[in-house]
Image 1 (cartoon, rainbow, N blue to C red):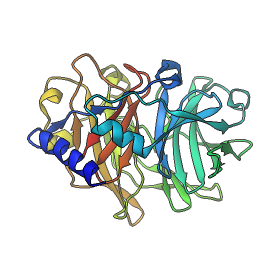
Image 2 (cartoon, rainbow, N blue to C red):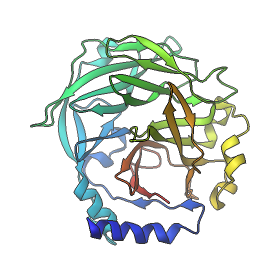
Image 3 (cartoon, rainbow, N blue to C red):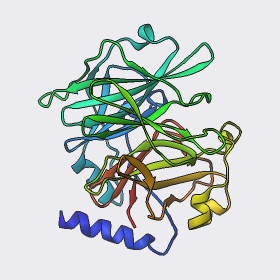
Image 4 (cartoon, helix red, strand yellow):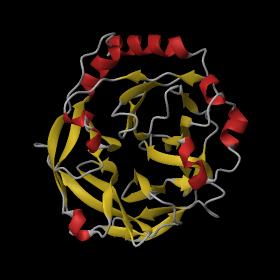
Length: 320
C-alpha cells in the first residue's frame, strides 16, 4: 500500500501546478473494447470495479482493484481484460416499448439498482429495476419482473436518468439535463425501497450530468459534468456559473467542450454544490470524450470511463 501511495503522490505532484488534470489511461483488451458494448456506468462491488454495458449481453464486466493499481503504477501497463460475470435480466426489448439500453448501476451490499432508457411515440421514458448479486459467484440477477417507470421532468431527445445514488434504502436518480433554460426547477426523484417516488431539491447545473460517485462519510459525492459542443442546441445552456466562479483551464479556454468533475453534498434532505473547486480534465484536441462512468479510487482520485466516443477508454484522474 505504501508503494501505491508513493506512486500516486508523485503523479499528483506532477500536476499540482496546472488547473487541469491529464488523466492516465488504463489500457483495456478483449470484448470491452468493442464499441457495441457502450460502457454506461461504473460502481464498486467489494474490491471489484463493475463496468455496465449499455446493451444487454447477459454479462457485466469486472476488474479487481489490485489490477487497476498495477496498471496505474506501471510506465508501460499491460492491457487489462475484464472478466465477464453473468447478468440475468428480463428481455427488456419485449417488456419496454422502444427500449434503448441501460444507463447506470449502483450497489448497496449484495443489492443493486439499474436505470433504463426508452424512446417511444416520440417521448423519452426512464425506468429503475432492482437486483441482487451472489457474493460467491458474482452472478447478478434482476429480481423485478417489470421495471418501475419514473416520470420525466422534461423531454429532451436521448436524455433520461443517467445516474443513481444509494442513500440508505432510498435511491436518488439524476436526470442528465438540469440547466436553467431546460428546467424551471431541477429537483431529482427519490425512489424508496417500497417503490414510492418523492423529490429532492437540486441546483441548476448547466450541461450534462452523466454519472455520480457514492456518498462518502461526509455525505459528499462527485459527478461528471460534461458538454459535447454538438449538444448545445438541445441543452441551450445558460451562463456557466461554475466556470465564472472558478475560471477555466488552458484547454477549456480554447474549446466549447467541458469535461470536469464537480462535488455535491447531501444535507437536510437537499443536494447542493460544495465550495470545492471543480476538477477539469485536460481536453483532447482531437475531440470530446463522452465520459459516462465515475467512481472514487479510495482517497487517491477517480476512475472514469467513456462509452464508445471516441473509443472505450478507462482512465485514472488523481485528486489534487
